[in-house]
Length: 353
Figure 1 (cartoon, rainbow, N blue to C red):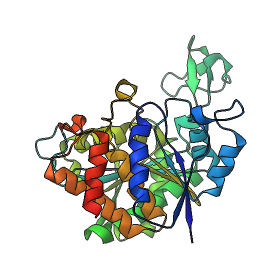
Figure 2 (cartoon, helix red, strand yellow; figure 1 turned 90 degrees about the vertical axis):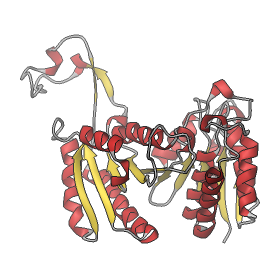
Figure 3 (cartoon, helix red, strand yellow; figure 1 turned 45 degrees about the vertical axis):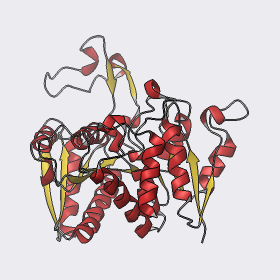
Figure 4 (cartoon, rainbow, N blue to C red; figure 1 turned 90 degrees about the horizontal axis):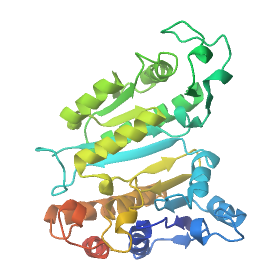
């Protein structure tokens, strides 16, 4: 059955990575139809996200999304909250010759699973004076609305939201255990010592679920302890699950260990939909120069192929990327090379022949 992929190329330098990446995936001659919803600057009828674009996304099996500086943000919000893509999966894998700051990065291969819909990203903020009188600071024991001029934000953690992302992470740890032929491990991290009612609840739910997965090693770490361990010995981690904000921060940190955001793919998964995008920004400072690193975009494409059922093709693409890095001849400037974006994609394509 033909799969449909909606392509949103993004802003600034992002299309320079997306266009050749889509062309490479098309060259695989898979049973995939590629559509282009008119979003962002391509929007019609005066809207950056017209109904036509939403309908095309709904009709697709997945979306391949380029980074946006704002023009496609409404489409991105729809892909996230409208399609309820609750698990943001961000791998961090070291490729030999990648521009890492570490002396010995060999063996880094971990995945951060970020809860994608809740936590502080609910977007509920306001003035402290609007809070009820009975809301007390547990530290100062005074009504929060009398602390003075200031603002608040709501941090929401639900059992349903936590359980679905934790089960997703456990299942991923099982899958990786089979693929990598090693015991599966899941680490749950949050700031549960300071926020026992929210981050502590995230940990509590995860701990309740752990007995359902006796074949997966399970541990919990306070967020700052996790970050220290990640920096000192990242190879000890396999799959790590965490609330939204920490996932946003720590996944970028993990990318820095293996060579930067140019190597950081992501996939956002819901019950019946997923979208895939590189974790880096739009790089407006190098727009038009054809030097943006397309690795993250290509790796996101490999994740998308696996999601669509093309598991072997996705693995082959990932291995081709790894082989280009291993040779160390055709690398983009951020990785210490001189190759253009197009040359890198071509080098990966040559490995697929």
